[in-house]
Image (cartoon, rainbow, N blue to C red; front, side, top):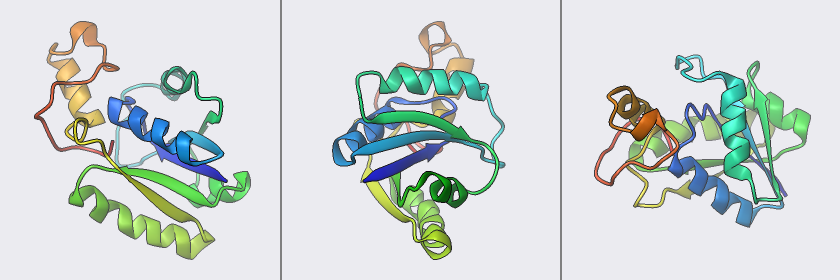
Length: 158
């Protein structure tokens, strides 16, 4: 079974990497896909996000990397023959955000959503937080690929 792990991945975080690794253990193939979110201002170009995802997926033979920056997620799923979407959730707020989309994807195209609970050690990390920390020069050399210390919170999904 093929699954889609969509997100803006701007930047990819250790939480994203954990969800991707765990999804790759559960599905025959996982397509990790950079999607366009009109509610977010992109910090990194799509090409750079794709490169970072390829690096994160290295060693996982059943993970492919793609992008879909126009149209609905279900349009991509229909075109690619994918019936399952993987979403990482850190907390109840994430689940409240994801549930209406999961229902709509199922209603529109029969696409099911598979939720993976975030690793508690990574649940405080978000792309928004990582970027804010890198702008404050608290992330060594602005390297947003390294995990932050435990104890923060808030922001977008894993």
